[in-house]
Length: 182
Image (cartoon, rainbow, N blue to C red; front, side, top):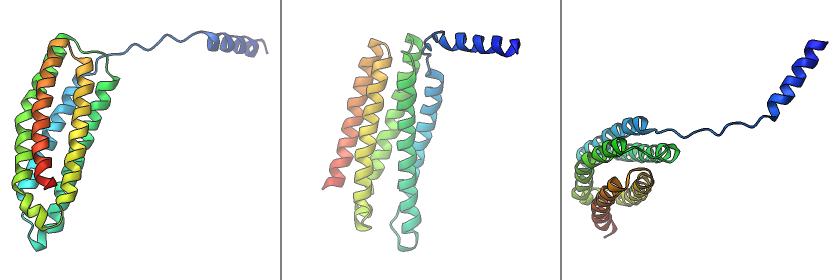
């Protein structure tokens, strides 16, 4: 009986002790891995768009491939944003690695958007252009949210570079959105 009384009193005392606040840690390695997934998703989208020919017998599978890869890309962007939000501020070295990795992805993203612009007549003819337009608007919004989250976590000098990259991507997205809005 005494053992249970002792255990109960220790349990009561331990539950009354304050918990130390959990210290944030940098999630840069996890974020960089997610950026690799992001680059793969961009390449997959470009491939799906390039294969889209609007032919009658392959319309549904090709359209689904484009929508599926756009969704995968969007989910990866959202995942990167969540990781960034949970992370502590990045060190100078981590900030540089993150910005350099993202800078390497600008060209492929622009190529993917150019492929979408080039295929607009086919998407329009197959009545799938409104879906692509909606996806473009969502991708732009989520890309901006990721860039904003990263800007708050990287060093000041790298934040300026992110702003430059954001303006380049925004222009590319705006150009593609303009084509699909016509």
